[in-house]
Length: 400
Image (cartoon, rainbow, N blue to C red; front, side):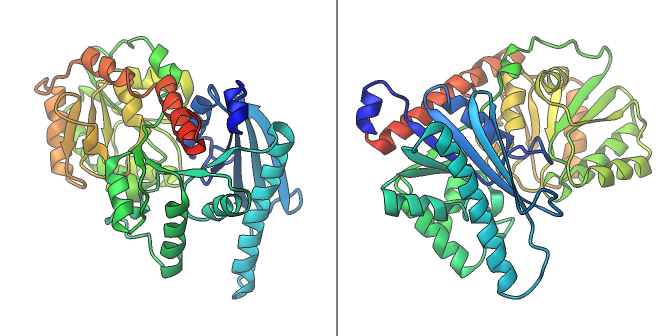
């Protein structure tokens, strides 16, 4: 492999992703897709993602292969196990999960040939495949982790075997990338030890870099929230409480809710019950690409009111557009949001959210949009992240 690279051939990387955009959720793990698209400029990258599906109509396994943005992608849907037999059902779930992954891997091998290394996105199950390739074929691997389960507030990284196994995967990886130092520290607090932890930012799509400044609404302050509409972590209901309070006092603002997810209908109905005027609160649904960039560029402030969070890519996107961010001080958000580009408040503090939104509306909080844009564009572009990934791969493979 090393000789092939030195002869000018691209190295071959297999992405195994636990989260990835799919036919049921085009936003799920979108940041992983963007990493693949950034890396494929420098290396041959193939992606495998599998998902259990209730009532799969086309047998037990349904392989969907396509090339997306130059990235060969094998998505395998497999029939979910509907029985609840002890021992048998869990084993069958595990069997189908790994078989689906190897169906995808075999497909990509027919397209790209053997891989030089693996890139695992989200632990822990996929780590078994990485260990298999390392121990039996001497294929190195790196891990990128995004999951907030390691954070103390979530308390969801549990179980003796899960922790032991995850430690083996992390120890055997060449390196582990996280989107924030906070997540890396949280992982290490669980004794997930590796000598090479590295912070790797999420990629911002070119649509945001190419978006020109959007015209603001005259006489109104525009706020925008973009998320997957999962209320337990995102606390959209708390945001809606504050919007209702604002609407009771003034009408010189508009709040755009962008996205869809498991709690969308529930939150939409909750907003109706609060009787927030439709001209002040607008649910946009799923918005992507250039339209999303235009929507966010038209805002005066991006708002994130999460109870817990790792680091949402919407912050990077907002900064690239020159739009400041009002967010809660959770996860790694405080590593990027500061007085020069936004406002930080405590999680769940509706009073503080109300007061800071008022301050923005009254012009008491002002930010240099061009300075925010200039600084962030050096950090979050596909060229930068793609080069960082390629350098990591070369080091893992011992290529000078």
